[in-house]
Length: 615
Image 1 (cartoon, rainbow, N blue to C red):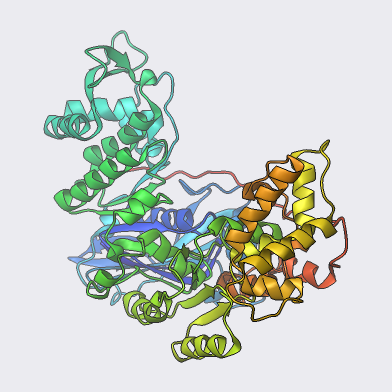
Image 2 (image 1 turned 180 degrees about the vertical axis):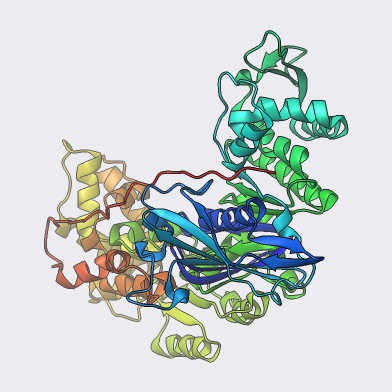
């Protein structure tokens, strides 16, 4: 079993380690590096299995001094050979040191062996060398004897599938696209391992509601393999695989090669996006099946997924958040005691906390208001490539954020910043200072709002008039001054106490009156007096950058993911994340129209290639 993978200058990884378990679920945001980890494992294990970099002599495993060449690498889609290397550079600046040339993949196994591979390039080709010493591989190594099994998700199947020779099957299996040869694999399994075929058929019927039927190929007269199935819930009708639903095809592409090749020829299974085309019930059934097969066959299964169902149903000790901007990528926890106290947090949210370095607690349940302001401001805390997990509705007396910080540190083995966004609630200065001191003592970042609650930030005359115009362009409507005067009168009526006096300014009233109640009364007035039926959703859809106070922009800057401030994070993304704050410094409150400029980041096209066979 592989216990650790170290990537040095490989694709987007500069120098990172990934700790692995017998059953590992890799999670993270889009483009975080999950698929790259699978590619690296496939490349390293495939090279060791297909070449003679390691060979046995006189009862001991020896290292070949010379490397092996390759033009392409199976399962790694690159068009330019430089894309295999960090920042597309095949060497570290100007260096004559061999250790500064190319990329490095290091594998550690559960027996204490270390497999060190160096990949370098010359004239657009690749050369792979094993740099391990005799001592590095002195503990009965055996992983080099087995090819990895790569299964790429959601590939679909060929409409017609010819019969392939064994060498062709090995080559196509190594590509990861199991759908191209699914009929051949079922035929091979039935012809060569009837016991495994029957186990597969029983599993498909029991867990997924369909069964394998006829599989036909006559060498003397057939060009293509004919494969049929029966839907357990659709009667006795026998159909070709082409008529099989995409979900059932996905299950076939994952389970058939595992039953066919494991554990005799493959000991490490790499699955990318197993949830493709599967609803949550099927995802849960697939997860159960894979966990059972991992134990039954004594193999290692490594999944890369974004499925909440799979992540949350997996033991947190097997969930590994991946980020190219973290030097060490470890399982969520090695302990179970602290985990019993963390039931409120799912594995998915804990994974996001590890990647972003933060968790946000919102006292108010009005998450849609915060999400709308976040989207308009351009910070993308709650949606985008670097989201931060957040929780809502704890109530005014919620102390959860204060004691959860210590638990998170114990549970995850690392420091996670907690931002507690608490409503102003009409608190006086002494109360506010007491809350701030309480947060400081416990290492929590307390963002104490100036206004009473989240809805108070929608009590904006310009925003409300704009929403009315959008909702009913032809209708008569009040102007901004009329709306603000009505708003102020309602605020004064609903204020729980007259602490600010009868001549209070609008902003003072917004600090001390409950916005939920005031907003409801104001929308009722607009409906009854002006005949315009307006809802909170209308206000959110018309929200503009100028409607967001500097207080909220500063708060968002405090809450954004640590990935944006990492020294190695691309400058373009850092600039994009700070676009809202930079624009805020230049925006004028009385500007009626705001010009928004966005420069899209260009992405280079990527393609696949390579060829390793399967022994």
